[in-house]
Length: 131
Image (tube, rainbow, N blue to C red; front, side, top):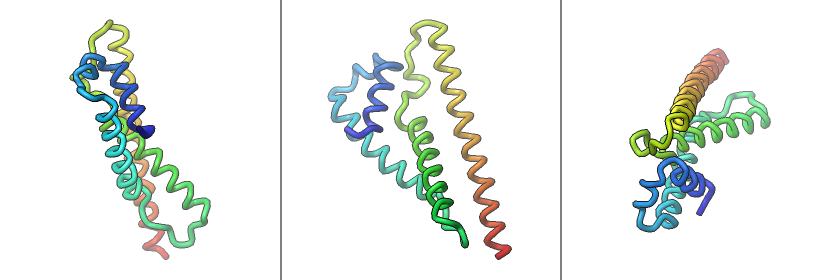
C-alpha cells in the first residue's frame, strides 16, 4: 500500500470508523484507492505545473514542479482520500466542531491555492506574450 492509501485508511479509521467497518477487505480497497490517488496526483500535477517558462531557470522549474505536486496532493487528499461530510461520525460536539473547522480550512486553502495558481499562470502567459 502506498502513502496515499495509508493516509486514506488512517483517516477513515479515525473519522468514519462505522463506514470503515463496512469495507469487506480494507487492505485491498485502500491499496487500490492509493493507486488511483497516485495517478490522479500525477495527472493533476502536470496540469497545475503548466508549460516551461521561456528563460526560466532550472531552480524555478523545480520550484514550480514541487509546488504543483504539493497542491495536487492536497486537492486529492481532500477530494479522494478523506471521508465525505455525510460519512463522518457524530461522536462529541467538540470533535465535530473541530472536524468542521479542519474541513472548512482545508477547502479554503484549496481555494486560495487554485486562485494563486490561476494568477501565476496568467502572469506567465502575460510574460510569454511580451517576449
